[in-house]
Length: 79
Image 1 (tube, helix red, strand yellow):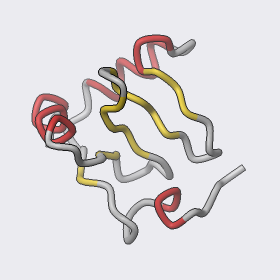
Image 2 (cartoon, one colour):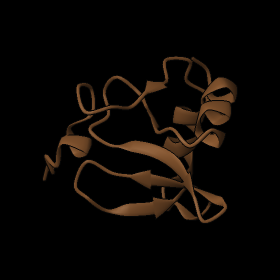
Image 3 (cartoon, helix red, strand yellow):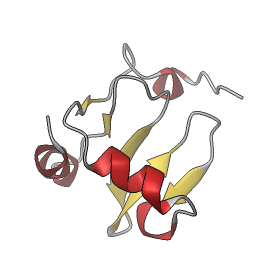
C-alpha cells in the first residue's frame, strides 16, 4: 500500500511497516511514531534524517505490521 493508504490504516489504530524494516510506524499522542529496529522511538516530524524519512513516505510497499512480519513486535531488538 502507498503512504496515503498506510496513513488511513494507522488512523484505525494499526501499525504499518515496509518489508525491509524491523520496526514499524503508528499513530500515538496525535503524531506518527517510528519504532525503530533498535528499540528507539522517534517522532516522524522531528526525525534528524529528513531525506530518508521522505523516501520512506514516498514508498508504495507498506503493509500492516504484525508479529509474523515485524521483529520488534516479537520483542526482537536488532542492534
